Length: 122
Image (tube, rainbow, N blue to C red; front, side):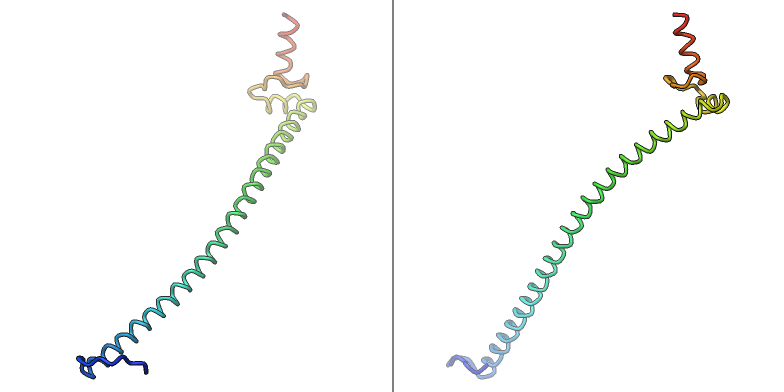
C-alpha cells in the first residue's frame, strides 16, 4: 500500500503492522464477499431447481390422477367382462359370484335367479 498516513506518535514497525492488518482485513473481506456472491449464485440455482421440481411434481400428480381414473375404468371393464362370463357357463357364474353378487343382470347367475324367484313370488 503506498498511500500511507503520517502518524507522528507511532513507530515505523507499528505503522507497518497496522497496514499489514489493514491488508489482511481487506483480503478477508474480499474473500468473504466472493464467497457471499458464490453462495447467492448457488441459492439462485437451487431456487430454480426447486421450481422445476415443483412443476414436475404437479405434472406427476396430474398423471397419477389420470392413471387412477384409467385404473378405475379398467377395473369396471374387468368386472363387466367377468360378469359377462355368467351367460357362458353356470359353473363359471357360480364361481364368479361366490357369494352371489346382488344385481347381476345375467339370468343364469345364482343371484339373478334368486332375484327373479323372489320377484315371481312377490
